[in-house]
Length: 186
Image (cartoon, rainbow, N blue to C red; front, side):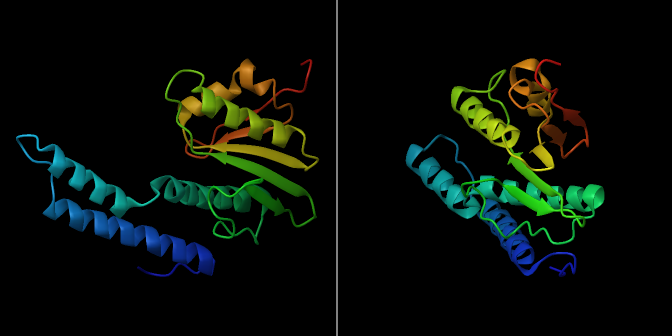
């Protein structure tokens, strides 16, 4: 894997680990498959090995999405010191904290959530509302909610969610679409 001078050492290490998982998965799938007829013990072993090979894939998706956040911040705000590998995926607190060259504070939350039903499931909804409230109550100059799923973006732009986050920008990292949640009473 060629080192990208644009990546911090922590980002490069995380990318290298993800690449190794990809290589291990490809090797695993060439030597193992689900059998016919169905053998529950064999299938369980196969799926368990698959799970162990992938590890916490959600954290990997979150990290790569954070690299997209970094690129977005660099392009829009000329941020030069944000490290996508500095904060562990899933760690508590604000996901994204950065400053512009002129000292303005940027905070953001990253959601890699894909609704498993319209309007999200109960736990998804609770977590998203908590993050939106955290952003809405922040005194940062720029408050951003980053998403990677089109349905998540559409849902967050709807009145039920956007009314809970006045002044927060919702950004779809895949399409580049942006939506500014209206101020209360708008």
